[in-house]
Image 1 (tube, helix red, strand yellow):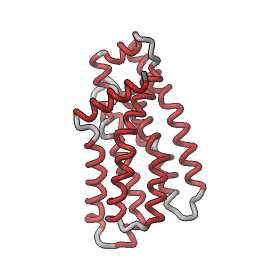
Image 2 (cartoon, one colour):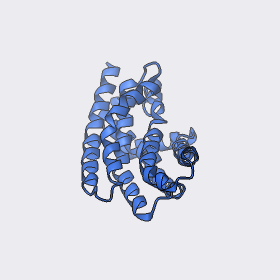
Image 3 (cartoon, rainbow, N blue to C red):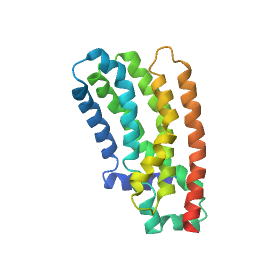
Image 4 (spheres, rainbow, N blue to C red):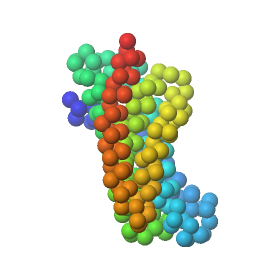
Length: 213
């Protein structure tokens, strides 16, 4: 059943353009930021990885108002509950679908973006490895805050305010990987991401049950 929910969410996102929007936004940030900084190659190379991480966070937030609310309003989540599918399972499937929709495409988009920032191969490798470890946490957090804010006014803006403080450890450890001496940052990033991915479905599930009751 998880696979069916993932396929359905991916199909809905594709029809609504939700799969292309985060990718285009990520590339837009990567393209415009060097123009704003100027032709300072050492500076661009130094801040490029952190900029890509911030762009990845914002890309994960873009579709947050479409992760839970449309299915809640249409009664799809109630149908899942009537079929005996736990809310935590639904949240986990939605987080997986969200990650598939933006995580791997962002990792591919980081390749041309790294050229604009003048990053060398070693820095690019650390960025890619960090995105692989950290983007599942971004997807899980996005689903959790989408469940917490579903049905509220200005849910998208509120979700962003809720998510930004929670994602700070992921950004810190992800940026820490860019330091050649920061070998331990990957372990901390992976541990943090694992904790978030494990906890977020339970938070989202509790929110969905509270909204239903």
